[in-house]
Length: 71
Image (cartoon, rainbow, N blue to C red; front, top):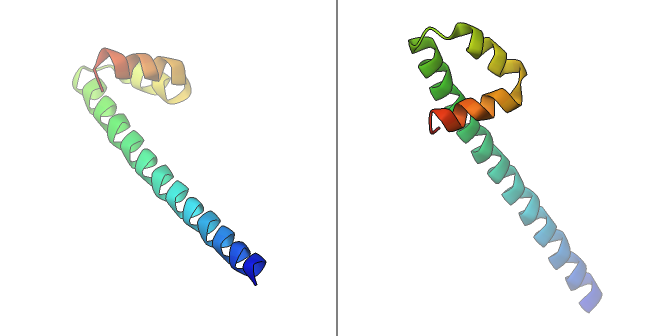
């Protein structure tokens, strides 16, 4: 009987971990959207459409822009 309870406990723990991971991933995605939207607004306000376009395909450049604008 102890093994069965241990199996149930392990299953519940794994299910909780997966649920927590999904919640964390969702929060991370929301935060990235927020940061990206701020970057888009700033680049458009400065007339930097070419940099905006480049940032969509060059993640290193995008990270540099996040740092430059303190986003």
